[in-house]
Length: 515
Image 1 (tube, rainbow, N blue to C red):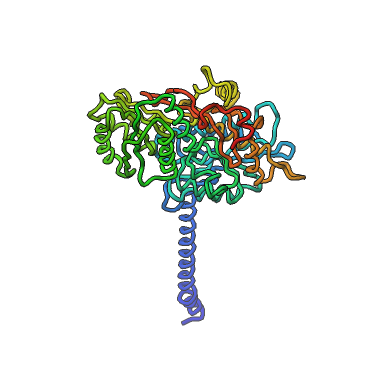
Image 2: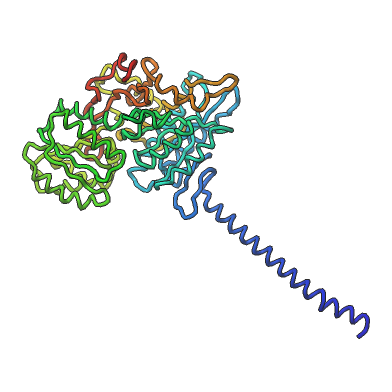
């Protein structure tokens, strides 16, 4: 073989073939690696719903804290979310005009229509309070930035948002309060405990369970920095007892309660037991139901209700709104419709105000549902009490609703009380932030100092809420808060009258020294 031929052969067989193989193999490795990277990138993009919000592996809900405008896939939130974005963008965050963050934490991804009504209305109220805080003409600081934290609907889904919130107390966010929380559930109780353990002030809007509060016997301060704008279940039951004394209906009562219960239903049942001891009623029987089997249980209880003596007209119901809806529907088909009954229950009944699955006709068949609402738009309008709240305080909110300078919030409904109570909760958070101690050389209050304000929300320093005066006791609970007694009607909620846990309207002296 010639020398030239030998060189060609070596090039072809010794170098070029292996080199092509190595290059091909290297290219394959690169492509595979790139593919894996691409898949991971795509998966990351798919899981991220919005800045600060993502869908965990295997999960269906977008969890976390939305640091920008995001409606959590709910078109109904769109207008108010956009208005919050504009308000947040208007804050420059400079030292001369400082701002802090308040987070509204609710289950924004709930699939229950009744829950979404509640969330939407509280969201609207929260924005109106933010707008008031930043534009009330008093030039107060710091300004308020509002973000939405989705606690989700699972047992542990709250952890994602709460852990993010714990990391937002410094830096540019400067989180100083979390508002809302939602229903009195075990999951929300755990979330509140975690937040307050990190010294983050929490203002509950619609939590009412006695166990999700400070000042419990033997547990004086399990949630340091927690305040609430809604009365406890015990206070709601006391208000119901005073209403019942003034408006008796028979002298025997049936107690229908969830077993097993949760923080809300358990404390409501216990409070009803106390009510029976201090009201015109004596208990004729108790009927437990299992929430997971309530439709079956209620069919039996329906017959038991009809078997009660003729002077039994009151049913005390300690259950969630979904159970109450089924109970009302079942009673609509009872065989003793000539026998009139009134159901007395807690604030969860407000969820049924717009529930399309509720048998409206049942409410026309000698069946009345009365409940303790957290707020009602008619409570302070026509001939209100001279103390404990005022028409002027409520009309501050009404003025915001009619203010064409603020951003749109979508269609408004007030009679379930949720917009009003959401507004008051953010107003209380703002009160705590702006009255807290600001360390020397700083422009915003220290984190833990916000919760220290709650025992001083008394006397002339009370919060003049749209739902009534909010005078906090030393544990952060509203003292002798006005409780609207509301009747669930066909297509709405009718205000009946105000009642009070102490039996009479809170006055200035009572607000000065709440027990």
